Length: 74
Image (cartoon, rainbow, N blue to C red; front, side, top):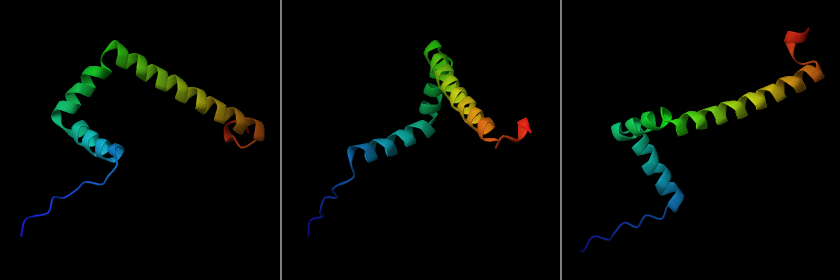
């Protein structure tokens, strides 16, 4: 009997995410990430993310203060 070929029925995205996680945890991926995050482009991306996150937190605290749920104002 000839072996039947195993067909991968996962979506392209599922295959990509598995492969990408494997790459991120490899030595090559860690080096690439460190290189990117220390570059100007990486620093700008981190700053954009942090600014967006800070704005969200600020908004949440503002709503909490207005509703009286924020313990720091009592």
